Image (tube, rainbow, N blue to C red; front, top):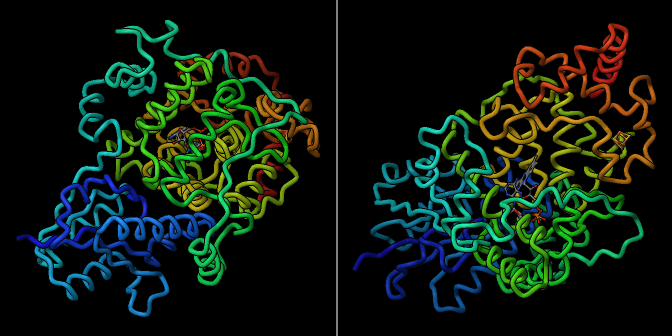
Length: 508
Ligand SMILES: Cc1cc2nc3c(=O)[nH]c(=O)nc-3n(C[C@H](O)[C@H](O)[C@H](O)COP(=O)(O)OP(=O)(O)OC[C@H]3O[C@@H](n4cnc5c(N)ncnc54)[C@H](O)[C@@H]3O)c2cc1C
Ligand code: SF4
């Protein structure tokens, strides 16, 4: 009988993962390892490390309770070699297996390494498809084949049809594919927003928090008020709570931001989906059921489902289609170093201060804070995409390169020149002012376009349009903005470039 060593990586914490599908109780062993290399190849947020290690430990225990034989390497084990290869080699030596079975790693870097093991270890390595996604890598390649442009909307419609989600035979329920026009409402302060799911850390989590504080003391972020779910049962409860209490307002307030309200009506399940505690289809089906049960309206349910069935699958498809080149793209040749306030939140710009401080606290910021505050600032300031990508990969508990990179390089920075989106998500301070109450408490004035007290987003926006005119002016979606720019007086343009130069030179 073949003896298999089944390696389960830290973002594959699901008992139905392909690598465990034909597990043989008599002969096989599951290896789960906490390794220093993964925790430090970028210095991940402390809360992210504590979350993943705790979820891994709980998953190891769950497998044991279900009768699996598990070898678990803890980060502080004396013999821990600090990397996957070393741990697999150690295990092979100890128990002698005929083959290694693993579900394909989600990140290019890791998959490339695993592909080299068979030769190095002189042992068969069976790499299985990650079937937790609704569109396989090959499905996406087939879909992309021969298309002039890869656009979310087309992909999403096809996914709706294929998986029969929110469909009335061949037509979308509500006769529209997308209800974004009903969304994008601002929120007023003082409104009672239902709380995010909070789980009290058990003994395992408390131990991991202590260990993280000790071993990764110099990493970004803090460990206070750790409340994430760390088991599948808890993650399902978090999903259930969102569906019951917040989904009915998700769409309306999807883009809203409020001072000192980091969670709002978002689901906060990205970290669970990305490490395997939740599966995409069960989240989509739970939302669909909420629509049919009249718990949530169509604009909210469709908006939520589009994020998971559409965007999440789409960005993964782009990642695997375009890697490894995608990692090096820099369409605008942006070179500026990341300002130090990205690590402290210490800036006079209130929107950035809020979004970065909340990120530091929670390893979470919602989509619009990531895109229209931090991403938009990075784009307008010409920050180096490599540094911006590294920052985003470090700071969020849901960040893995397959999802972080297309969102940053493609969506936020347009550093891919339009592979993922049709135009840069660039905007002045008005958008932030419309969707938040940040500007009211800011030292800068959003209504002011130029001068020392003017909102920096205002002049940086036009400066970006001026500097990249050659690359962007032929983009039909920007023609109105370039029309406005062409009508600007020379004095106005001078003020914009002077203010921008002064501001950018002072960044450090
Ligand atoms: C610059 C930037 C960086 C980002 N980095 C990450 C990242 O590292 N990891 C990550 O999972 N998401 C990332 N996103 C996408 C999105 O912001 C997060 O998925 C979302 O904020 C997670 O919070 P939530 O679970 O409350 O999501 P909700 O707003 O409640 O959305 C529900 C779910 O939809 C999915 N989703 C929504 N938007 C996207 C998207 N653009 N791409 C992929 N999935 C999406 C997520 O799984 C999310 O949990 C990034 C977006 C931007 C603009
Ligand atoms: S005024 Fe400008 S910098 Fe200040 S919070 Fe508003 S958008 Fe941000």
